[in-house]
Image 1 (tube, rainbow, N blue to C red):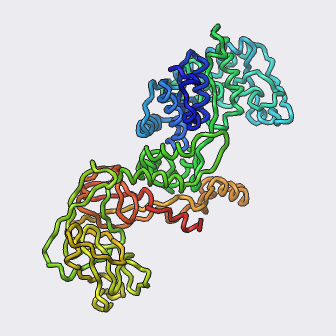
Image 2: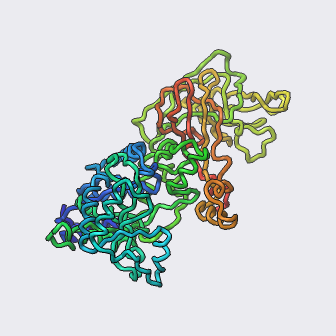
Length: 591
């Protein structure tokens, strides 16, 4: 695809992210032969979180928009932490978000090429085997304002480094005893240039390559070469890699020189461009932190709906369209920001409002008896499934003498501004009649021995039935929802809330650790975890919901957005609260 200044309108320019502007400029200049090729390179050492969704959206989105290719490449250079379980989960998450890779590659596909290149670099005097400990190497790195100290092994003979490098992969060398380092510049102000480590010894089998390798390449050495060999044109990554970019380019230069590639490098190289991470309030990211929550039993696995993993949001009922809409709203910039969780939830509400089926579910039930409706009689009404989408159709609901309503919809001593049920008050039952409670409280309620209301009495006003010609009676009371006691199903409702009580858990945990003698892990996290992040309730729902499938999007009218949990069965319905209808956290904080 060719992009020129003439066919890019001013409006399009304003709506483009800076990444897309760079891509369009490169296309206009004919770089990389006018090709666009990106890649998404996750490490399969855990489940993807919401931050990865932003990277997925730009990597795959740019390729899709400009007629290019986006490949999936697993960065599987550390067999200590990687597993096929994570590989399959990553693929599922990408597909669920609506993207598909052109090819799937693995860093391990290039282990032999990377090894051969390392051997060539040793021969050229650009790499050497170092026998210092990791602590000694760290101490000799210097600081950004002070040069580092050269390793005593930096100028060892090439033949010696070659022999030791082979020994590093023999399986006989103790891990940590030797590393292969690039020989660059120990005085360079960029710390990444101070003889970075290229290989380390692990002495363990790889889940794809078996026992062939015992020494494994480091990320900085691996990444650029894989991009170069695959033909990547635009390597898109987050801002922490800005300082890595010169090293990325240098390793690509070395790989090109070793391959005796005569094409002009400036027009035929992968170009690294960095964008800001997705940071959200009330969320703690990083696979290490998430793994702690899983192992300590704070959550019920990686797909727990309180987890910020993509599979956790999927199980909670977030739609891929809602997630991508939020990412599009916050955009891509060159500076990090902390985005409000409320903005994310608002984007999800906007999307679910278009796709969620409307149903009635009573979460905190109390019985309502319509005293002037005959016992044994049933009326059947037609309910619209989704007023935003006529194609979603309708379903039937039953009305009878005894109904379940929300306990919060009745108040025994109700103030004038309380527009729901109470002695003498009127409300409309959704899709049904206007009803009124008796003026006398003794006629209005039945209580148990503990003084708890177990039954509310009211009468319907016959001429007010919804849909009939003379049903236009005006009242001050609200419309409330209900389900028929004889035509409903009992269900388990899991009301999920934010896992973290503080806006910035990362800073809070770090400060707590510093104040308490370096305590780490779950002990540093526990003070900030929300003890009420999950509330399990018994509820009554419309019988029609037994036909719904796992992951279906629902709006429990007047309650919140929910979905059908994968644990749900026809005999035991389970629903997860996705998000409330309004931002209750904003109200609590007074903002």
